Amino acid sequence: MVLLDEKAVPPPPYSSSSSAPPPFPTRTSRQNICSLPPNVLLQIIYMTFPQTSNVERQRKTLYWLAYHLRLINRAFYIACMHILRSTYLPAYSSLIRPPYSSDPFPMSSATSSAPLDTVQRETRVLDIFIAIKTREDLFTDASELHLGRDELFKDLFDLMQPRSRLEDLVRHYGMREGVVHITSTSAIGSSSTASLDSVNSRSSRSQNRTSIPFSAISVSFSPRRVGLTLNSSGRKRTIVEVPRIPNEKLEVVAKKLVKQLKVWLNSS
Image (cartoon, rainbow, N blue to C red; front, side, top):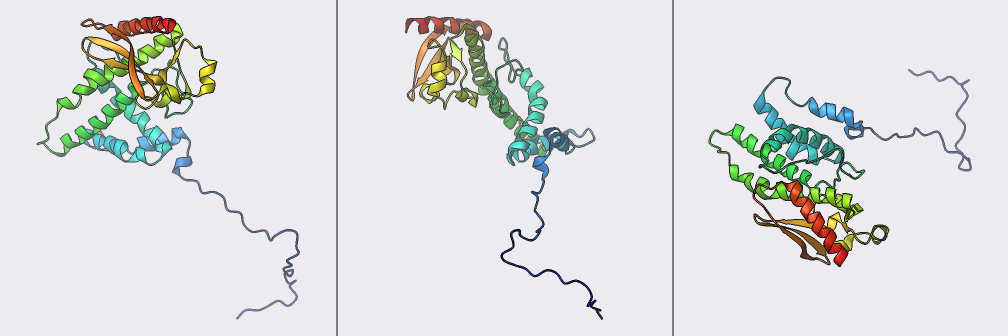
């Protein structure tokens, strides 16, 4: 039984001419895990690893990071790549062919403000190595019949790694000599999709006419000769070429290419 108090003041009648609407409760945006600070999200992902020294379980977790978790969104991609790159960098460095050198993500290089963009082209080679290595480790742990295939890394370290490293060295020495400059399109990490015509005209006018954007050049790498290729109007042409000497360091080859590039720019 409900007792009604007749002395209670009734609510005011609703008037459509009222200037202000009733005080409806405001909805706030729901917070999710992706809105957490990067250091907190990184710590959460670290907690997914086994707390005991179970190597097989750790490899499964690394495979899960590489093929599933990092594909969720940008925040998870950045956090997962931080863990994967730091984990597999020692294994990657141990497979570098002498006398080649390696520097996938140097702190001193000119990088873009965006975390996913980098001008360092060797970083892409490291990411490919991580994708192959995590998959092979998972298959090895899953079955004793799986045999590791060394040829999977042959092209990676015989061709792709020294070529991308040489391109990074050309950028480094070329910027120091004033014959190569960085543009907004140079931070794609690859020379296959960029061309000289895709460079912003405003940034091109601000640069010296005797320099080439890094996004428009690539290296043709062969056992006997090394050349610089210019991508212009969708066509590639070799503008500089120098011979290779056995066991010659990439730093020496890069300096030769930059020197010849400077001569080519002055004569063209």
